Amino acid sequence: MKGKPWPVEKERQLRELVASGADAGKIAAALGKTRDAILKKAQRLGLEVVGATKFTPTTSSKLELNAELISIEEALKMLNAALKALDKPGLDKAETLRLRTIIQGVKTYKELFADYVNYRGLEAELLDLREKYAGLAEKSKGASAK
Picture 1 (cartoon, helix red, strand yellow):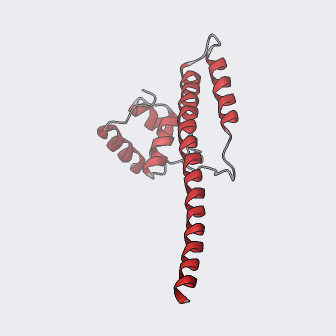
Picture 2: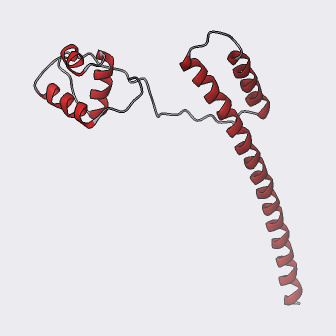
Picture 3: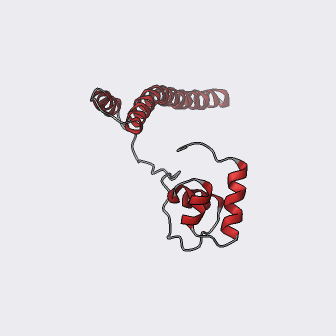
């Protein structure tokens, strides 16, 4: 059942078992889940399981922002590496999914990077036009003052 949502009834049972003071092993046996699954779900629900050690989640939404964008060449190198890795026999399902996600991410990055470069060019043109307009406005004020 890895990766599938928990039914509401199982969540309710988990809450009740935690409230009754059952440990993670007993809860896992009662719900037909692994101990790790119980600890992960309990953490996500904000529950404290008796005798449980601090559990580090496997997922994280914290992203580290880079000061510079990667170049298209770097993105293509990542794409190339992922495609070569996919060609290897015996990949498990998780690794195949990870590589496909990288490939999709690189494709999306390439498209967004092109848009970004286009916007930067438009921004530069706009700033140039503003300067020229300001210069013409100054000339116009000077000519009308005479």
